[in-house]
Image: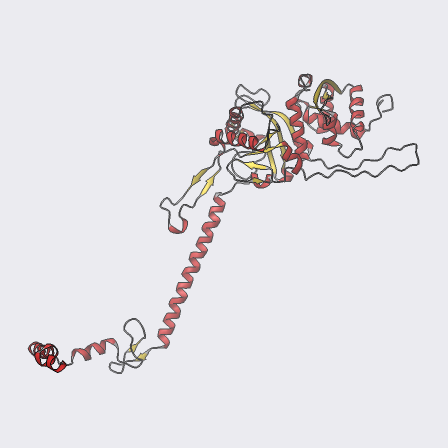
Length: 451
């Protein structure tokens, strides 16, 4: 197309990236669009020109504004951009999705200021951490070289923009296109199997709702995940699994809570813990002990059964922006410290870990039994090497096993026979000898001798 079609001289690449971004987030400021898809540009004008050209073509519009405090404390107003119906179809082409899956144009949200939608956009950007790539410098009518730009460094991000969807219906009853009452809409859904995240449901919290309402959403997630439908073979399968892949970690797909309001670290943690406690029945696994009678080597040992539970991880937008999703910014309900996302999503204390401990204990028991067997064999070898022939009966005599016996002595049986054949004094004579010995010791003559 020529200059008349694109009067603001935007490039096809910039227009395509802006359409792609708005196809995902639905409404955003030019600053947010730049962060999402063109963070390496020298200034904001590249994105603004693309937005204006797309508006000129009838694909985008700006029907609302947002206001925030600038660095000098004064309010700064920014235009909000959203797609038109034609722009939605163009964005569907950029994303490679059917138009029926694109949702609405977010026109009404943009008119109202779209506070929550903008927070969702910021959250997706904090997850993405789009790396700033240098752009081709614009030719200028000057011989003075352009100064070198230092591109900002961002932490490693998660997934691609095409892996995101927003305002996704999750029908507890009804269908995905016509969810019934009691269903919910996920603020955003990420699929990033290349980063070991087959699916992640994201809820953005602006502190506009009580903690109990947020906890109730987790309950509705669990109800949605429990819903079964018949597959093409007539078997019952979870409805969610017809659209998204299983992580293989056990339990239902995870839910990430991202808190956006700056209320201080302690107040933020208190809110996380309150939601955790109110939703405990949804996320807490069940303890399993297969022994019951608790043998000594496995006393109280078992595993956590995560089947039917919803893993919940939480963070704050500022932490996510600063450290990225792979930083230690996630607090999983039931864990005790901050973790990177892969660690936070990994179930601990599982049956596989228990089986590994059981296998280790089995190996140790076998090793102990082997040591005992070797000791028995060594003892037998020593006894065999130290044996002799009884001089009385000619039988073999082995050392050990009773009273010490000198090598070459008769065997125990022969000694007992010999002892039994020795003459013994009559009982009367024995008593007489004993009395005489007592008199010798204690009588009058003995006392006179001592004096």
